[in-house]
Structure formats: C-alpha cells, structure tokens
Length: 312
Image (tube, rainbow, N blue to C red; front, top):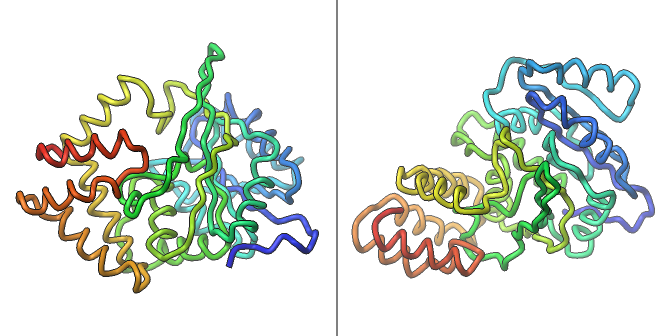
C-alpha cells in the first residue's frame, strides 16, 4: 500500500541515477537531489560505459558522500532505459519510495517531499508532474503532462518524464518481479512507459500533478527531449508512419495483460485485438476509442485522424 507519513519519521527515498557521458551536468543535478528537503534521500548510481570521466567523478564523489552509492557496471546496457532497468533490479528492496533521476536536470528542493505527501494524501502508488524545460540561453517553458487521465492512455503515452516519478515500494517490487521473470515480455524502449503500464493495468492509481518539480534541460544529447515544436512533431509523425508507435502499443498491451487485474482484463484483450488487426472494422473501432487513448484533447483528435487514415 502507499506509504503512511503520519509517524513523523522522514520517508526514505531511493533515487536511481542512470548516467552516460554526463560529467558536465552531474554536479548540479546531484546537488539538487542531495539538497532535497523533508526526506531521507539515498542515491544509487550506475554508469553505462561513459568515456568522459563520469564514472571516475561518481567514484570520487561517493568517497566523501555517504548518501551516494555507485553500483558497479556489469557491462554496457546500450540505452538509458536498459540502465534504469538494471537499477530497478539491483537497488535495495526495502525503501518506502523510489525515484528515477536523469543526469542533466535540476530538481526543485521540495520535489520529493511534495510528491511523498501527495502519495500519502491521495492513496496513490505513483506521482509524476509537469516540468519546466530550459535551454542554454535561459529560455524556459512549461511542459504540461497533467491533462486528465484516460482509460487507455497508458498504452500510447507516459505520464511525463521519468525524472518526475515518485513510486511506492510495491510498485517497484512489481516492476522488479516483471523484469526478473524469465517469461516476461521484452520491456519497452522507455522505462517511464513500463512503470505507468504496470501500475495502471494492475488497478493502482497514478497522480499527475500540475506543479512542475523538475527543470528539464534541453540539449543535443537528450535521449528524449520535451517533445515540443515543429521539429519534434515531424519526428513523431515519422515514427508513426514507420509503425514504431503502433509496435510499442502492441508490446505495452501485452505487458498490461501480464499484470492486469480482473477488472481490466476483458477490455485489454479487446484492445490487443484492435492494435493487432489492420482491417477497416478494427480501425473504426479504434477511432471510436480515440478519446481514451490520449490525455490531451488535441492529441485525441490527431490520433483519431491518423488511425482513420490508416497511418497509425
């Protein structure tokens, strides 16, 4: 169950930090995590074959910072998501909360404590939030993710950047069991998608908060940027045309079915049929469900048009 914060003891939060060639941003990011207010924070870092001195810098910092533990690498993961998946498998299993941490953002000082309070007050298993993106020239903009959740939005989008997530112990245990299962379906290319699918399909509640808690750095080395602007829209359309996005939905609906409770199973079985089939009848059935596939109203219209036109 979600943690009870009425005892007066500071909640323990394990922060999972995945790094790869992030030496230039790490000091600012790490300090913003260590300076979190109202929580007992521990950082577990795993470097993924950096060549810019990131691993060496982490080792030096860990030697003088007891709240930072560097997990030895067991080989290159090949992606940020794979690195995070290894962290999920390797970090201690007894913390109240868990958070994902990118190497290049800045957390507001109340990020963890505000989300821990929301988790307890609302009785939810995870909290994420809007973010404020910023560029090297100081330009800032709100990236909104808190549109009302829809019935099947977890099959087509995440609840925001993984760096905003705060997750309960039992949600992390569910993810760990899934990743450790020899029969598990290959996890998706983005770790934030996996956690959202597991929670929602299992019947647990996820809260997306309107208050930004992360300053989301935009730069050329971002694995996943803020997804705003014409260039980003064209990139996403290209992925849709190449059937990558539909392929991810097929994968996610199967993951959802592997953990679904009885209330969600029948509907998910029907959704699996619809994303697998390409005939006209399935297409129209998906168009009728477009309002349940994305949170933002504009995105609902777009996905309906793409499905109806046979592009998605």
